Length: 174
Image 1 (tube, rainbow, N blue to C red):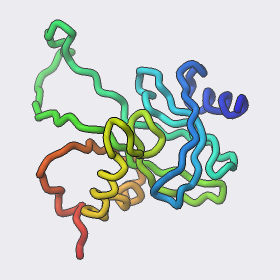
Image 2: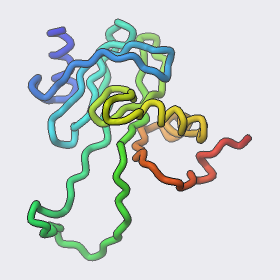
Image 3: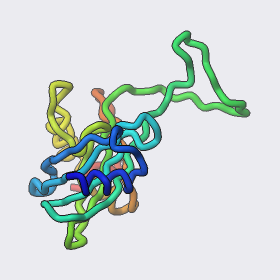
Image 4: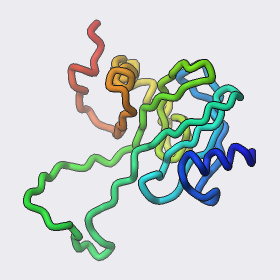
């Protein structure tokens, strides 16, 4: 594990104190075993993965996650904006961040899976049945997994409760 920790420190460029080891099954790809470290440093790497092993084989790779957005106001409620010329305001829906990401195994095959900000894969927990809810969303909008490969990037979602309908591009053509 020491070699894996050194690899993770190198992949993410952070000290070991910011890294939390994980060993998790990917529920979306035949329970492939993912091992590595999750970054808990409160900066742009918050939630990033240093994936060191897939199914027990060395396959070091970095998975950057969705950075936590900071609020533009202090604890006293005063706003702290940089100088601006224009601002657009949108409603902030508070939900759970889900990142769709791809990783590769030792054969070079790529797989798409999903993670919570501070977990390497989606799972049910005491905070909520996130895996079950996401699987329900994938049944309802089966084109979501194709977005990652089609756009050749990781995609961040905010999963929240509501009766909104997804755009037509995410719905099944059937």
